[in-house]
Structure formats: structure tokens, C-alpha cells
Image: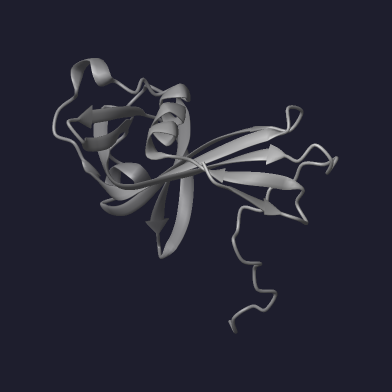
Length: 160
């Protein structure tokens, strides 16, 4: 891992390897699937499972066919993270790929959604990219802050 420190934040960030990212993804049962709806990104909490068939990495989830996720086809991402402010640690993993229906179930790979009623429609995110970061408080900084954006957000707004 290579460390980069953001002086204003007082925390060091570490880029994680693909293996570290996948291990952390496997450790959490819930993430946020992000899709486009009416031209805007929207995130939904979902239960998921990882399937790795000889390098063909997929994220599997169940939903209802009439939901936004069930109707969606195309580019999507899954974000999973853990933030422990008291411990001064955090991590975040983002998986990007193509979301599409999965014909049939995968047997023992059931993501077991918290809300099961009507969740019989299987979707799969075919993974194209995986990235992740760990954040750790610098001992002499005294506070923990994470800047998730690489560049500051613009304060101007487009004309409406």
C-alpha cells in the first residue's frame, strides 16, 4: 500500500490492492448499488454476494422486478465502506461494471436480502474495476476527517 497524506484532514489514505478490496467486500453483507435514474445517480442499500468464476468476478443481488434496480440495465457501481471514528480508521471500496438480469438463481450464492417479499428477481453486476482506500488518523493530528473527493467541489451552480 502506498500512503498519501492530506495535511488539512490529518489522516493518511492508503490505496488497497484488489485482493484487499475483495476481502473487505466479502466481510460486509450490505452495500449501496448506484444506478442512473432520469439522468441522475441514485444509491440503494442492498444485500449482495460475490461470485468469482476463474477471474469472472460478479456481484449478485436479488430485487423485485418492478423496482428501479430490477428495471435497470447498464453501467452501475457498488460502494461498501466501514467508518470507525472512535478507532480512527475507515475504508471504502467501489466496484464498477455492468448491471443486468441473471436468468435463474445461483443456488448457494443467495444474497439473502433483508426484505425478502417479492425479491425473486436476480441481478448481477459484471465487475470491470475495483478500487479502495483505507484512511488512518495521524497520531499527532488529534482529529479524524476524510476528504472523499480528490478535488474540491465547485461553489458555482449551473444556470437553471
